[in-house]
Image: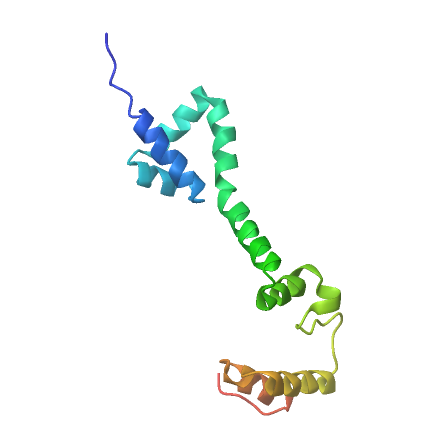
Length: 141
């Protein structure tokens, strides 16, 4: 008795690899490779090394992004340098104001005023309502 021919051909495996290198999920990769999810899972059960390789492929976009950031840093891109430091050396370079404990109403009002001065924060939906609440003005439900 001869079974159905496998859909996990060299071409299908190449499409799956390409999809995983793009960082696609299992479901997205299956759609990209034109196979069912169960086909992928059955193949992985029979080929555990494929599962390991798949997870390595999925890290590719992260590695590429890190490489791109590194290359920009090496070229002296000030904008990327600032962005990187704001995230990796927060204590020294963060532009966010972080609240460690419950601030007083005066501190919250000052924070709102500072944010409004520093940016277009007042255009954010809900900012005026927050100020009204902080000032004891009732708002409409």
